[in-house]
Image 1 (cartoon, rainbow, N blue to C red):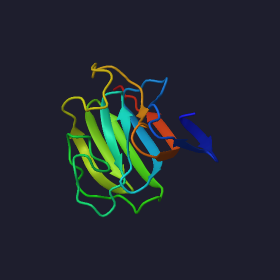
Image 2 (cartoon, one colour):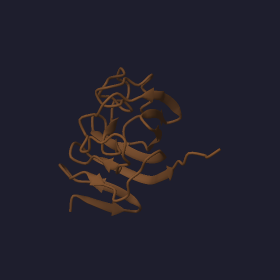
Image 3 (tube, rainbow, N blue to C red):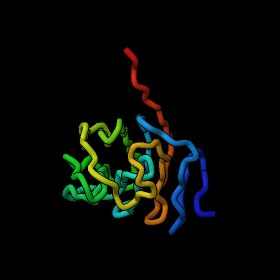
Image 4 (cartoon, helix red, strand yellow):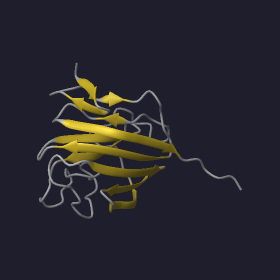
Length: 156
């Protein structure tokens, strides 16, 4: 069993497969709570194309591979990571290729235009809806309270 649920919390075992949602999303807001140990590594895949990094980097300088980075693409504005083993929250909005990421109440990316796929990508069709992915193959990670709100364009 690579992943299991204990008291409402999803937990992975070492080298677990990624979890990929059956549902596909276009424009959306994602609220997700996670917990990682210091130096543990995971990620949230958006539309199977873009990874927002999860990393236990409390007290370290911001990095392209740090917590909340658009993996290897866009540096977070600040390191808002909490101390190890505390629950943390991402509030992520993706509209088209425009990304906003708030970690623990601090804005890391504000309407940043995504330019190209990240390493976690499994689908290159950037115009189409895609699934959400929870990365499980690196280090220990826990997830709870995952809420996706699809955004629809208002008609005039």
